[in-house]
Image (cartoon, rainbow, N blue to C red; front, side, top):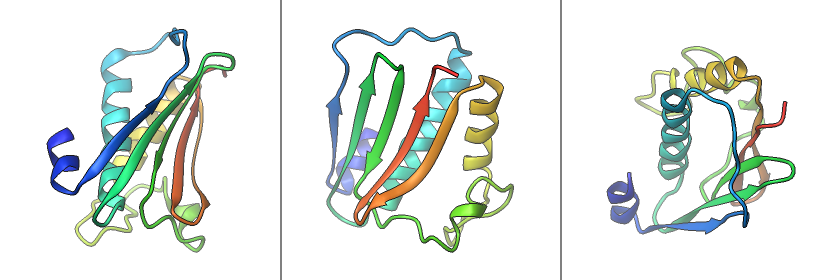
Length: 127
């Protein structure tokens, strides 16, 4: 993924909490969800951009923020619907998989464009 980001001149920025976040989770499922979130963030950026990882310990939270094109308000309610995609060749399974993993772990999550040029995927680990 770093290679794909490098090809597009996308920089990864880390703003992480001083203390680690300890969670109870299926490691492989969470890894797959995070891979999909970061992949979507990279794909949302045209040209140069930034994917920022922000964590807090209290409350335990992770935000993956990108400087991509953002999410049009007209499609935001359909984002986690199976087989819905905003990508030309998208299959609409990535966000559905992420949703299922987050729900199975009882994590609260959101995906929204918080301001022009900034879209955040936020995960609250404290249910």
